[in-house]
Length: 156
Ligand code: ADP
Image (cartoon, rainbow, N blue to C red; front, side):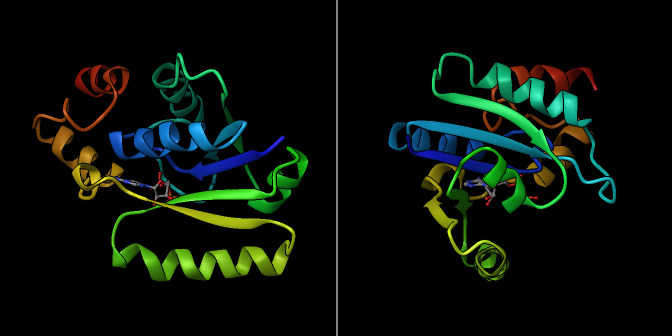
């Protein structure tokens, strides 16, 4: 069985993330969306909230599981029997960071391959940080995030 892991902060999940999840779910037998718990990082949403938002947004996609992890991604991948780390690419600006991280992960775990899926044109400019900024100032984000995320952002 081909299990892929899609790791990220998902703070909050956006339509850009969902697009990658939906497309990857068609390629792999099983997709684990892995929410990073990094105590050194300041998130707007707790790991439990990020997991819940993703679970709601992924309802109906049968082969997708949402989990959270801390520590090394390659350790989590090994623990879950996955040899594929999946990442999305928006623009050239993502490339250098992703490239370095993919090489580092390969150094740590040569059996695990990082695979990139290129964003859809309509999601290219969407990022969790811009969504947080727009929502903070009361701007409209409904078109750019899954419905359950929009309602949580509105309440905040
Ligand atoms: P991280 O802090 O690990 O980068 P993010 O939640 O920002 O966490 O991103 C998780 C993954 O989703 C990354 O691979 C990122 O490139 C991808 N991603 C984020 N936004 C988009 C988008 N609009 N289109 C495609 N991929 C995206």
